[in-house]
Image (cartoon, rainbow, N blue to C red; front, side, top):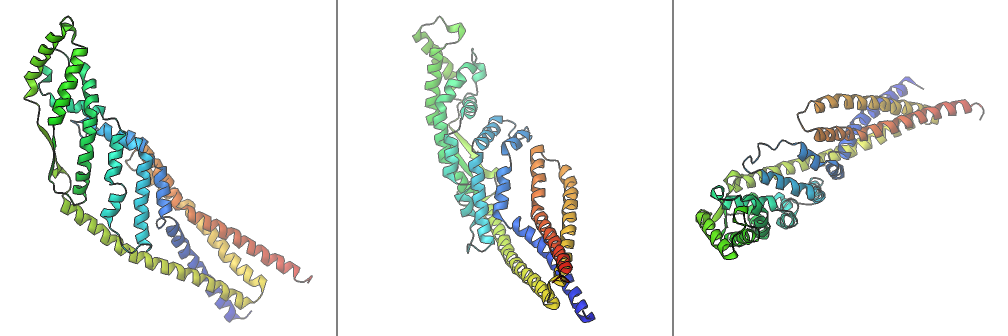
Amino acid sequence: MGSLKVVAVVLLAVILFLSLAVFGVAFSVKMTALNAGFITSHLERLDISSLLDELDTGDIYEGNPGVVNYAREIIEDNEPEIKQRLGQAIDDIYDYLLRRSESLDLAEVLRDTILDPDFAIAMVEQSDLALLAEELVVTMMPEALNLPFAMEPYLGDVAVALEPWLKQQAGAVIPELYDYILGEGQGPSLVISLEPAKGIFRDSFEEAFLESPPPQMAGMSHAELERAFAGFYAQFEDGIPVAIELDLNDLEAPDQVAESLAEVEDALAESQRYIGLFHTMYGVTIGLMLLMVAGIILIYREVRGSSRVLGIVFGTYGIIGLIMVFVARAVSRAPVMNLDVPASFQDWLMRLSDSCLTPMLILASILLVVGAALLAVSFIYRSRQPQE
C-alpha cells in the first residue's frame, strides 16, 4: 500500500474514533436525559414512603403536627397514583421538547396531572381525617380546659361526626386553592363557615356525653345530665369561632406563579431548539461514522486490511470506553455519599448515577466485542489465504 493510502487510512481511522467518542456521549444523553421512559422508570423506583419517614418534619407546622401526619398518610396511600400522574406530566413535557406536540401549557399540564382537583378530592374522600377533626374540635373549644371533666374521652366520637363535614369542606376548598396556585383564583383568603359544624359538634358532643357521662356524674338522671351539659356548653359556646379563614398570602402570589410558569415555558422552548440541534448533530455523527467505515473499506478493497483497521478502532474505543465508565462511576460516588440527604434518597441517587452510565457501558462492550471479532477475522483470513 502506498504512503498516500496509509495516510488516508490513518486519517479516516482517527476521524472514526473521534466520531465514536462523540457518538458515545450523545447516545448516553439520548437514552437517559432525553428519554422520558428513563426518567419515569427511575421515578417509579423512588421509595417516597421511606423518604418521608427519614425527613425531619419537626419544624414544619410545629403547632399543628396533625397536618404533617395527614399529608404523609395521603402521599403514602396514593404513592402509585401520584407517581403515575408525575410520569404523565413528564411525558407531556418531553412530547413538547421532542416536537411530538406543537405547544405546551404548563398550567394545563399540572391541572390535568398532579394538580387535578378531582384527584385531590378523591384522595381526601378515601383518607382518614380523624386527627384533623380532633384538632378542629380543640379549635372549637377554647375553654375546654376549664370544664370540670376531661374532654379526651369524647374527642373520638365528636371527630367521627365532624369528619364527613370536614371532607365536604375540603372538596369545596381544593378547587379554589388550586385555581389560586395556578394564577386563576381570586384570593387572598378562603373562608370556611363553622356554623354547620357547630351544630354537628354540639349534637355529637351531647350524645357522647349522655351515653357515657363523666364518673362524677354517673348517678344523675338523663334530664339532670342534659341540664348539666347545657350549662357546661354555654360556658364556651360564645367562644367558638364562626369561621376559619385560610390566609393564602403565605403562598406564592398568583402573578408570581404565572410569571414562574411563563419563565419555565420559555426555558423549555429554548431547550426544544437545542434538542433539535442535538438530534441533527446526532444524525450527522452517525452518517460520518458510516462514511469513514465505507472509506476505509474502499481504500483497502479487501477483507484482511479493512477488518484489521476497523477492529483496532472499535476495540480501542471499547477498552477506553469501559475504563471511562468504571472511572466515572467511582468518581461520581464520592459527591453523592457526601450529600446531606436521607439515606433512601442517597441510594436512589447512586442507582440513578450508575444507570446514566449504562448506555455507554453497553456501547463500549459491544464495540469491544465487534473489534475483537474483526481482528480475529483479519488473522483467520490471512492464514487461509495461502491455502486458497
